[in-house]
Image (cartoon, rainbow, N blue to C red; front, side, top):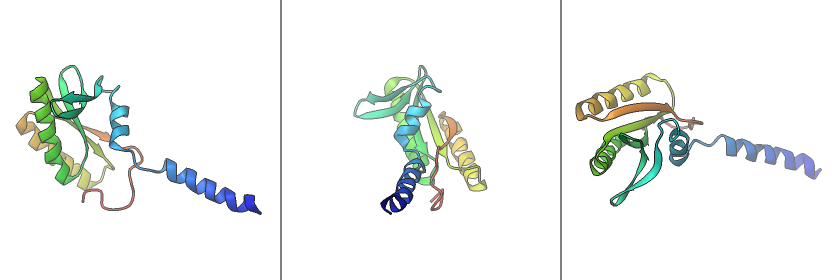
Length: 132
């Protein structure tokens, strides 16, 4: 009787653990080898997410209010490290809203001299609006 009750609970817990959205720290660790970059490099009074041979890279989820923050941080880190600024935006899906927001971010970054990359977020949360 106890086993019959216990198995559904164990399966539910395993599903919950594997279905969590990827954290930003996990994304940074996953992307570091791809961009041949060091993680969490100390810059004056802050930490740059990724630093490659020629870029200071900020990793951020693609939300409207986060675009400006990511651009500012990448620019600051690049200035301090004398590297080129770059931003990796983590995207949840290929929806029209995501595409529009990413294109907007690219236009702004191009004007400011910030390189833009887009990477799919692993296990994105399904609930809620993706671009609130």
